[in-house]
Amino acid sequence: MTTILEDRYVNSFYLSLLNGNFVEEDANIAARLAEAARTISDPEIEHLLATPDWRSRLCAAWFIGLSRRAQFVPRVGELLFSNANTYADQGYCMALTLIGTQECVRHLHLYLESGREDLQSWVVGALSEFKDAPPVRVLDHSEDLDTGVEAFRRIVGFLREHQIIAADLPGATGRCVFSSSHIEAICRDIYSETRVQYDSVKPDLGSAALGFRILYGPPAIAAPYVFLGFQPGGTKDESDEGQHDGWPDRSWYASSKAPLARQLRYIFAIDTVRHSGLNMIFFRARNLAAWDSIPPKLKTELERFSLERVERLIAALQPQHLIVIGLRTFRQLTQGDGVTVLRGKRGNRLVVQGAFGGRLTSGIVHLSGARVSGEDRELLKGFFNPAAPPQCEGPVTERELISPQKLGNQFSSG
Image (cartoon, rainbow, N blue to C red; front, top):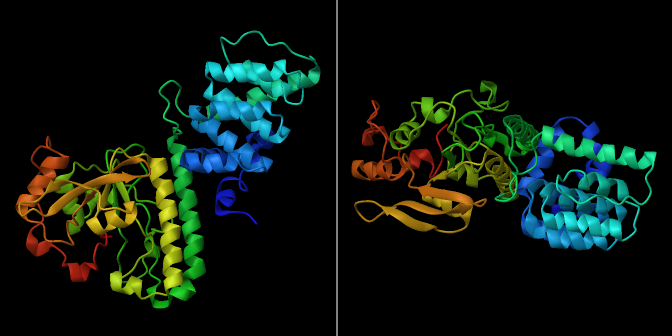
């Protein structure tokens, strides 16, 4: 019986990774490999390496190499030398090649000096990738060896061409650097998965089936801010507006007249394409009470489905700063209250900070679901954007704010 970890990181990849078969597959495999290498955690990798099955070890080693996690080099070198399984050894060889430190070169030479021939072409190909590596002593030079070395080089060339190897060491963070085409492929996959999920549960949702919405702007890489709300509201299914098909060309936060968008424009410097956002739950609901009224098992399934994809999107988009709209949403997302870094004039919490997905995450008081005074708005603006020039569009007045009852408690507009 397979585990969730194996379903996500092994079963979908091992046949593609074996012998570098992905080179002959469609281009989408590059984005999927990059995403998996970026999102898998160190403990998850350790778990797969501890599994006797060669498939798990093969995939773990590849993800170590693609994300260039140098802390695993001693373990990978040990496994390569242990001669446990030739298939998994391919992954160890590739990991050492892609990380590329002198310790990696030493492990590869130790393999050759051991007299083993089963992976000789891969190791020779690996060492040929290093400019300053010592000469390679080949045990049995043959046409098959040349063919194997060329195949290995073709695999490495594919990885470089599709830009799915993490940044050069030293200083590599162990995170893959995605191209815009890879980001868009990841996003399209998530839209497709969400359509399938929504269609499968729509009959069970009944009158609560109001569609879904994912991104609120183009998927910009390393944007200054990405905003995250709780859930898109709505009173009808708006799928015919194209929200099930993809993201808008312009940031909703930069163009919408909704009170929340106007508040965010006043506090943050927002342009039309560099600021996007999403919600912790993709599926629409009229309000929190309506969402809580759907069957608990189905509600939990949809919340888990959404959060898993939120993690993938944040990992791919790599925002410099994640802004969570609503302190309750922040608490649910980060599983903690965070550290209070800004209080209002009455001592109320305005901004808390913590981490989600290993990056700086700030939770802010809900700007349209809570009554935020003019003085507190200025404090927020000074905290996040102290150098911002005066804007033509003034802050939203209290009369324009949506009441918490109407909003449904921590919902994002749109």
